[in-house]
Length: 346
Image (cartoon, rainbow, N blue to C red; front, side, top):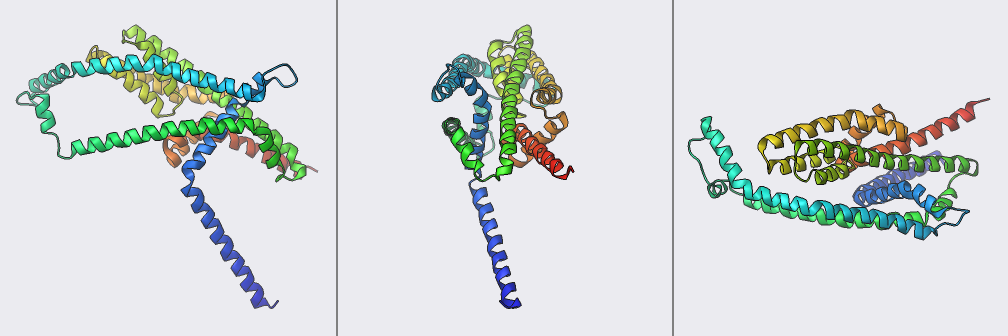
């Protein structure tokens, strides 16, 4: 082959390689939502794996693997249903009470503005709605439709995650053996060790999330109970479950506390809001970094950086998945560093 033909062949291969990489990247980007569901399902399976292994009790009399997985899932669904039964009815009752008191609160705010010279005369709620900017009604309808659509999509996404993670747990051994075929024989032992360590760290992250939820729920229940906020235990449950969602979760608990406290008095609502702001600062700057460092083995600096980068890259899902992803990456980096040290050691 002449030099010109060799150059042309290399150029064609390069062009096709670059084009193939671009097409693959475009396909992955187009399927990013599905890939995110798969990744979350894998993390959930990794987090539940030690508990399934405990119930299965290999070598002793325990549950079959499918029964152990099913028991874990029944417990998860049971907790979700119990949470709904405990939380939804009181919150609906408080929302109805707040709606009934809305005219009185509206008049009270008007009286305050009139006394300060910010308004010249009182108006009714009907007049306020009538004088609202044009298009606000259609915008509200559109916002409600988007919210309903997002809720339905979230429910279907949750169902997909539960089903897919169930199959991940069922097929864990077969998948591990299949993936091991693509790893060089001399590296399989190290890869298996890294995979087990990653499972341990993700499971530790899940346990740390439960610890954080318990701590925040306890603080919320004690503080709101002493303040005399109605249904303080319900708000504490909301705060506990909200702790599973970085950044937004504490805001959900705080908004719920303020809304319920507003049915008693504006002063109590302000005090409850200030208390949750203090709790959020405690959680974000002390509890999360320290508990994650102790349980997951990720330093507070890495935790803060992971949350910032994950939130910037993918918003709320990125923030939720930031810490377990950082833990998995730390295992990979440590394994690569150990392998390189082993090769360079005479």
